[in-house]
Figure (cartoon, rainbow, N blue to C red):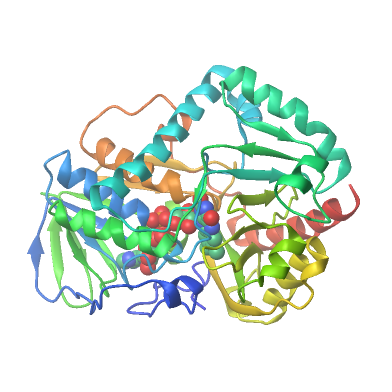
Length: 445
Ligand SMILES: Cc1cc2nc3c(=O)[nH]c(=O)nc-3n(C[C@H](O)[C@H](O)[C@H](O)COP(=O)(O)OP(=O)(O)OC[C@H]3O[C@@H](n4cnc5c(N)ncnc54)[C@H](O)[C@@H]3O)c2cc1C
């Protein structure tokens, strides 16, 4: 598997991974639209995931800019076409209480509003394209995985209600069991009312349609190899053609190849996240597990598990995976996810695996993303830390605004680049150590 920390060029013209989404999404037959002749444009956006497509939409629709999106593989071949489809209110790895600790309550409240704007952006894109993305009923359960953490939930829910006017709901272990699931490893939950599940690949293809309807040009199978600054702007080089442009927006996120843009490379740790999807549950299995809802679920582990029931009654279950891309296909990883699922739902011992796939998420040094002008005429957004479906949609819009001179909200993540990792060559050693510590913490603390 392509490994952005190892490979110095992004893979190109690859098919989608063998995911549940690729197998169950009716996509228009779209041959690759490879750029084969030199062109000029105002803005080049590199990467056709949610960030790049939302950015292109804003540039074309609201800011009157001429924009060309270049994607090395297929539309949304990266994370955007292979994620778990959790449309969450947030990004990075810090919750609102942690944001308040780091930046103060006033700034945390601004973050909360901005995260709400990210949900609105997803809705706006869905409405613009009338996108059929199988949006499910709203609700996200943050589940305590041990009793000690479960006891802290009422206070946490109260804090969110009081400080953020966020109408979350505390669910005791018994209420959780009765109303939502017979999960042997759940000790209460907080329910967030405004998050929901979608088909992420359908959503991304809808974004691509919207961007193109608004006038953006999209070329797939067209990797950017590098670019040169000229007296008038930039010349961007692809295998078969060059593009003259005034600005470059990097929306390559975790899929940025090693050395492609060093200041982004050394500030992002690409981490593999893996997902399994089971065979459909029988009526009896659904009853035994009391899974009669489509709420999103994530637990409080350091090495989190997340899961949801899909419209056809399969369970999607995700978590951490291999450290290196070359190990991603090792069957040990889906087997571990399946056994974690069965430890939570011991009544589902007979459940079989149907799909497994992985993708790279960009983890930042301080657990928060950044969106910035990294040098004159060059912009990027990255570092969503595995929580980027809604935020990438807003980040694209904010990038377009930044590149067009529109002032952004005064949030710290919009006013500097990602911080470089110290000793970046040892990032994976650190990751290995973190996983060991996480396993220990999740089991014993
Ligand atoms: C398994 C998994 C599950 C996840 N689940 C969730 C979830 O449920 N909820 C959530 O909020 N987030 C989730 N995420 C994270 C979320 O999917 C990402 O944060 C989001 O999709 C990032 O979108 P993006 O547009 O920034 O990047 P991407 O979608 O990764 O797009 C980057 C694109 O850039 C292209 N590219 C790279 N280099 C070049 C180049 N040189 N030239 C041209 N193109 C290039 C790549 O081919 C790729 O298509 C998950 C991620 C994974 C891997």
